[in-house]
Image (cartoon, rainbow, N blue to C red; front, side, top):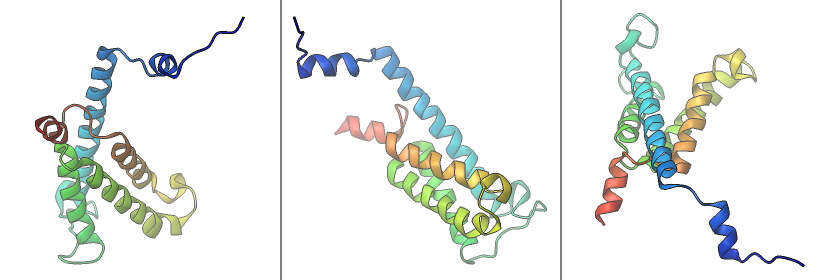
Length: 150
């Protein structure tokens, strides 16, 4: 005797998550987004001389220089948006692209592997921001509040 499973039963068994687990997932997504974007905000501030600057001695990139100054501005604005969870997905896609650009123009010419060309941070930020763009901001975000008010 064979047993038939309806599509509704399949969906119910494979995607069933407890409300508690769903809340925890949303909270963890938010926590990761907030921590990563805060660290990236600090990274962007280095371009303006904060936290040791770009040279470790407080040096800043030249005003209006390409790509350093513009990259730092994009990093600051994008990180602030992702931090508060506003326009999170588009901002995260842009930040992912900024880090991909940084990797391929600065680090990749020095060697293939990120460990050898000092490109680990660029690579990690690129992929983490791409992940944030794909999965969303989590529970604690302005985007979530905007969605609820509609």
